[in-house]
Length: 103
Image (cartoon, rainbow, N blue to C red; front, side):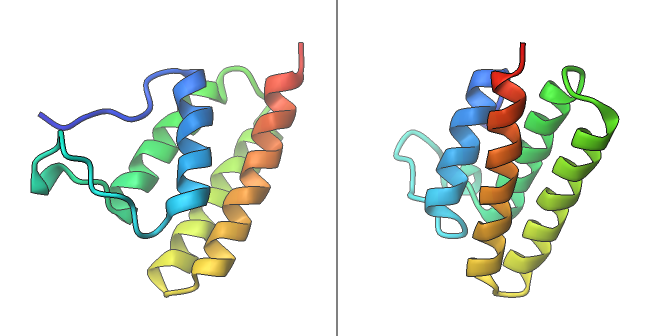
């Protein structure tokens, strides 16, 4: 059974920070089997799950922007542009921080 990284709002915030620091070369986790290790595609699935989790707490334009940044970041990583992918994740993080600080 695969480990879920994102299961609530706080775990999403933590995971996004983890992605910014480590993507695309995630550290190997000794408690996971080789086929369960995090890779860039699995990471973006988790990221998408996190966006869905907070999606009900943001307006549609913010949600669209978050999904767009995640999609563009994924494309950058797929094309070998690690700097561009990370910069887009940082932009996503800024929006998430704004959303988290709103009442």
